[in-house]
Length: 432
Image 1 (cartoon, rainbow, N blue to C red):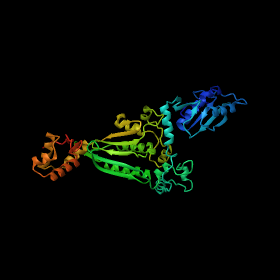
Image 2: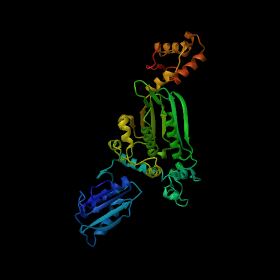
Image 3: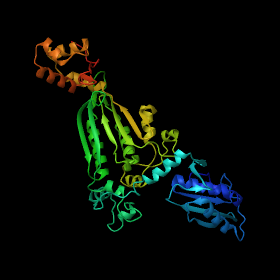
């Protein structure tokens, strides 16, 4: 019989002569996944060798675990018979990270046990204290009618007397936790979508707040709003009708759902969406989870920051848990759209504005004054509105209104501040 390959959750040891190495593996798996299985009597390629078992064998394993791993865990240790050979299976679970083995700390990566640095240890300790299921909600008078409606919409029923425990909405003390606060009908969290004119945050056009309600309802409202903004441009040139969107909505959806799922909600800053003339930025708080390498991230491997929230979002079909989201974005836009720091992850999705400008151009009529404004700005990008007014002979209010309309039509942009900024006449607009 062959048990297959070692994984992040399974470790093989040939005999209890490797007890020390086994303890290190067990602590390493607990730090990575909160659980692990250790076999004695199995070769590292999964082939069953068998383990000799004496009067003290099981006690030595139990004592070895008690002496080596801190904080203390209570494992399950059993003897199994495979191919007429005895093997020993040790199963352990724990939620009191970090765990040490012989005074040192390790983290599981694939089938390896890697000693972690002091900084990684601090990050691990912070991740435990940051857990949305361990932090008590500020408000304990919570209701969940919106969440129940979401479950009912997926033909799932929440039992009134058990759903709080089943969905991990309670702390160990039986009080509502932060995740319960996020999913409650009324809370203090709001998801923001801000739309700016130009390519920086100087000129805010619109700011939408989706929140103070069940977070998953607000997440869906943001998706609906962004889908409505995703205009279609139509090119009637040639023999075929061609349509193009401003951005790949499937990529935006994956980036936004990942931002909400993996956000460090304990830091009291929700994820946000910023839309500019040339791009969309999706920002979440918190960098890569400890123990997840950058290359693993791009390959679609996941180490959920909020595991319990992931389970709920999976049940409600918000996410598929297939790990295809990041590879999908990379295949469409490249790795360079991800900006990952210690405290933030920003995904920047470029906009396909050219076709939309062309479409707008066909339906826009410019009079002589509009054309003069554009020509003056092309000749002098620093020209002041007062100077345009003087040269054209129209009042400041009239010129300002015309400039505002030209911006809305996608013909004109302003980069920088009102005093030191510059006018940008889109080069696809041809002077007539």
